[in-house]
Structures are given as C-alpha cells and as structure tokens.
Amino acid sequence: MYTTLSNASKNMGLQENEKKTKIMASTPNNRARNIGHQFTVDNSTFKVVDKFTYLGSLIIKENVMTEEIKQRIILANKCYFGLSRHMRSRNLSQKTKITIYKTLIQPVLIYGSETWTISKADENLLLIFERRSLRRIFGGICEKGIWRRRYKYEIYHRYKYTFGGKDVVSLIKIGRLRWAGHLARSQQNNPPRRILMSQPVESRSRGRPKLRWRDGVDEDGKKIGAANWQQLAMDRTDWHNILGKVEALL
Image (cartoon, rainbow, N blue to C red; front, side, top):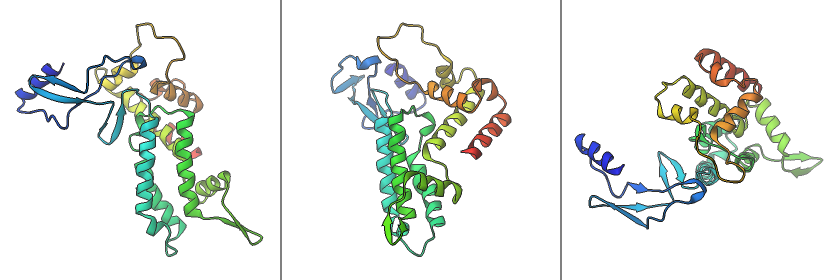
C-alpha cells in the first residue's frame, strides 16, 4: 500500500516527510502484529506509534473516544484560563461571558465531535467540565446571608432560559445527526458513506460488540421521531427543518 502511495505521490511531484508520517497498526481486540518501533520502506524509515494527531483530532489504535475527549477537555480548560482575566472581570456582564464561552471555549471542547462515538461516561466528562465553567461564570447563590454554589439543575435552568444555551451533549448529538444527513445525501462512492452503509460479513469475536458511530445516530434518530433518518435526510431542507425544531426544544 505504501509503495502505491509513494509512486502516486512521485507522479504528482510530492515527497513524503518522514518526520510527519507515522504508522499505526489497528486490528479488532488490539491483536495487531508487532512490527517494532520503526518501519522501513524504500529507504524511508517511519516511526510506529499507538496514537497520533490528525487535523487536530487524536487517533488511537484502540479506536475509543475517551482519550480524545479528555484531550479536548484539557485544551478547552486551557482556553478558559487563558481568558480568565475576562471571565473574572466585574466589568463584563454574565451575558458577555456566556458569549465568550459559546464562541471561544465551547468550539474547542466539541471540535470534531460530529464523528464521535460517546458513552455515558464520556458524556459525564463533558458535562462536568461544562458545569464547572458555568458555575464560575454564574457564581454562587446567597440564601439568608449564606453563600452556596449552584446545583446542577439551577445551572442549566439559568443557562437555557436566561441565555438560550444548550448543554454540550445535546449540541454534539445534533451535530452528529447533521453530519449523518450530509453523508446520506453524498455520492454512493464517497468513502465515508460507503463505510457508513457497509455491513460486516465476517463473524465477530465473543462478547458485547463495541458501540459504533451509527448506533449512536440510530438511537438519536429514534428519540426525535426519525427512526428512518436515512430516508428523511435525503431532502436537505426537510432534514434541516427537523433538526431545527429539535434544537429549539432542547
């Protein structure tokens, strides 16, 4: 495969960068053949890795999202504290701080989330970060002269009904459905669409199968009354209207 890629690159006047090119072996149940720490092809030596960053997203050989989500949380946290002077300022209203959160911090947190397959544990990690950020913005509540921190339902009630905010997990699921609609309408030979519509023909190993991206999309589709989302998404306008109505109810 590499030789084919190399020959095609040379025909276009391109040359591989050994420092930027990595090799990662990934197979079911992590049974990849041990190929050592380096791999040499045509006098070019490439480093063998367990994970790498591609277009800002972390790819790991186990093909689970938890590590990527933790990385996004770390980056979003750095972004928040980079803006801490503004977020702590008494000269800025809560409305302005929420706008800063939505436009500068939240996009870092959910970058690339349209392709995420997330578990309940992953959802909790994201919601914990969001609540912590919103608590800092909203501050505590004074009851009879005693200050206390806001409860979970108080945070989201204020975030939703005062500032029109939506929790991060809902945003991710809406974005995932929007991307699923784009795939459903794409050309049949489009690689992502072919992967989405393909059906495994080999028998799987024992145990509970891993959660797939499509499983999450199918579940979300059923929750919004669009179990046949693949057919509904073929009409771009209708699909966007459906998602718009769902988003308005969140």
